[in-house]
Image (cartoon, rainbow, N blue to C red; front, side, top):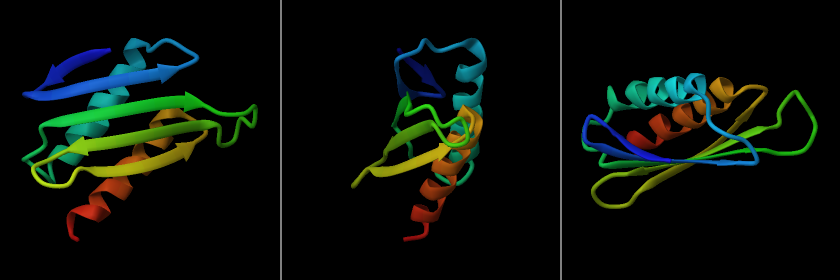
Length: 98
């Protein structure tokens, strides 16, 4: 699914399930959280996948931010999509200072 938020091209890919309005809201919330720290984002690619049957940490999020120069990438995991997105966004924000 492709769409835009504040001129940022979003590509959301889900593996093995369909995105819900709640999931889209969580993705937008985390993207807006990251946008407070970085204003030159031009694209964001999200790859969400449920791995295994372990309910405690089976949601994996791979997130690539398209910025001028070298793109940033982070992977997060958690028991929910919100936790996986938050884990990945925290890892991306730590890369901003480098």
